[in-house]
Structure formats: C-alpha cells, structure tokens
Length: 202
Image 1 (cartoon, helix red, strand yellow):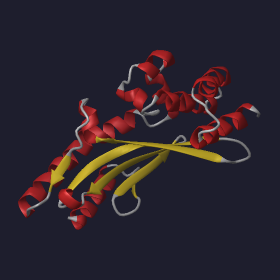
Image 2 (image 1 turned 180 degrees about the vertical axis):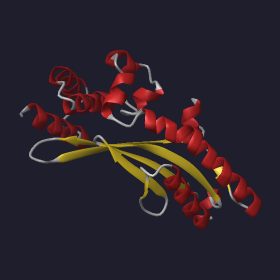
Image 3 (image 1 turned 180 degrees about the horizontal axis):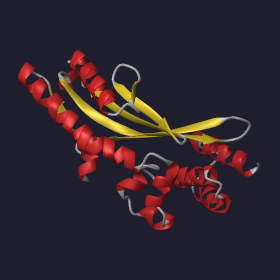
C-alpha cells in the first residue's frame, strides 16, 4: 500500500506542480507565510491496509528579532462535507486499493486542491472571516482554520493582521488573549502570552 500512496503523491504533484513531495506521505507548498499540506496517512492496528487524506495549513508568524512561531492545523477530507467522520480508504485487496486510490485522487483534485487554492494567502483567509467577532464564535469551517478554540483564533487573527500591517485590529485580538485566555501559571498559556508581549513591545 505504501508504494501506491507514493504513486498517488506523484500524481498529485503532477496535477499541481506548486506542490512538492515532502517526506514519505505528504506534499506541501509555501505561499505568503503559509505552508499548505496534503497528507496520505497510512493506518495502523485495526486501520492497517487503509489510509486517510489529511489537509491543512501551517502558519509562520514573525515574533521579534527574526524569531518565528508556527501554528499548524489539519483536517480530514470529510470536513469539506461539513461532517467530520475520519474517512478511511480501504486497500485490503488489490481491487479495493485501485478503487480507493482513484476515488482519493478525484476527491483531492475536485475538492481539496480547489479549497486550498481558495485559501492560499493570509488575505484570502481574512477576507472570508472579515467580520472577525462573529466568525470567531460561529465555528464555521473557515474560522476553524485559525484554531479549534476561540483563544487560538484570537491569537492567530492577531498575528495574521499584524503580518498585514493592520496593527490596531491585531492589538485588539492580542489583548483579548492576554486578558481573557492567559494564566501565567499554565506553561503553554504563558509561552503564548510571552510571544504576544514580544510583538506588542516592538
């Protein structure tokens, strides 16, 4: 099955040459502070002889003095249908493997790549979430790209706006993280807050 996955990765890279094979099971491309990824994840245990399609984004946020923070989020292809279901493609027989690979390629070509093309820049993501406050609360798929919880959405909205030079709105989101979602006794919250403080001190 892994050889078939590798073949499918090559087909994806041939379909859209902006994607390059990156590692054993994924293709990636970089645009505008964003890495986009399509991953064909082999299963294990009870999911052996199966694979799933993951896709997502990794953001690079400039902090201070050339320091960079990254934030990554990945979705299952079923999320494009509006219902998360952990879709696994069956490869238990040669026939089922060929059928699954063909179906997966069609899904990637028809749905995944067009969706990633639609959201291939910070600006395109922000334009979809232009009403920041309502999109933070409504759990739309597009708002989830910035984080599955509201504190991380504020954090990433802040950095996205900051990277585009929209300093005032970015400070609004940063201050909300500091005031409502930071307890310095919790390590990850303190580390996150320290990155925000570094940006605000510039």
